[in-house]
Image 1 (cartoon, rainbow, N blue to C red):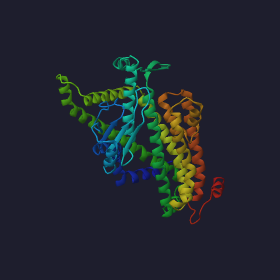
Image 2: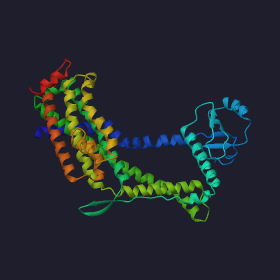
Image 3: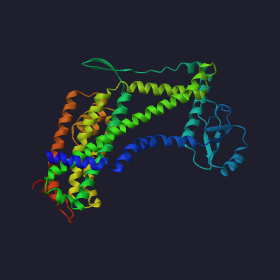
Image 4: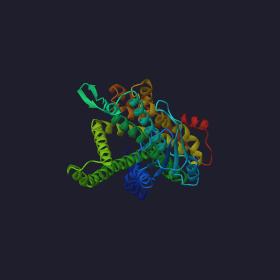
Length: 436
């Protein structure tokens, strides 16, 4: 056991002291933030304005299409053919909208002309406005006041209450979906990231013939177990540091945003009318507050414990297989053919997870959360929905048994393959190695 701890210590310290580890640990949260913020910022920064000239043959829509920051509607254009000639030589943001004849009871023929295809958002915006105006026209023709109909706009909200042995408590399907899928996807990423590190490390030691010296002092199985455990601790350390840094950055960013919003609050309380942009901002703030309230209904310590268990269990199971692949081959090209059977269950779990998250208590969800090769991802998606405790226990026991079984089989391959050089291995030979 002492030798295994020495191998774990060597693997852990050698990787943690690398500059790449320190850089990725510090830069990782910034990269995650940049991936989510920069595309949205660029989209807003480079947002162009469309100018749509409208020819309304029915006369029902003149002045009824409202311009905004993205689209300007003009009703004082030239004749249709003249406008088409002008639009043809103009840029992609100049368009002509022709609305055909209608009495309000039937849908008019509507065509939009431009030098290029308009965006789906623009088409949807125009369709919604025309639909709304046709609806108002038909209501007036039926003798109904559209303003009265507009006021009759009930919005039903369903509050979730979870019944448990401890009593009743508030729940949230939205928060459970976000936390569950997010946790499952993180496990998916970490298994690929750190499992491949184990395979690369084994291949490097094998290629450099360093392993010939190491196994003169330790058994191959001890070497494999120590390497897997060492990289697991590296991954756990990096994950905890990422979580702490992300929390700190989020707190700082949230404080900065609140400071920037202070002047706006003073202006609104001074009696000035609130414009559409301010109303939209208040609405977004209310939505954000509601989301945070829903997330507060989730049992974070319990979910964090389950995440650590399934993260470590899934990693240990798959890293043993990755280590076996690294021991069986001499280069990255040969490793690809053996990685495919390993990666298929992980990818399948993410694909099936999109359906399971919609029905976390189905038979499909149960069986995929029990099978060790998919349970780390699928059960993590189900945990926020609070499945029966016995299902969680069965899933954990099966995952532990699966890890022990795959480690035993991988150890058989590792023991033979770690000293095998210059020969391309087939699946048939791997099968033989398992039973030596």
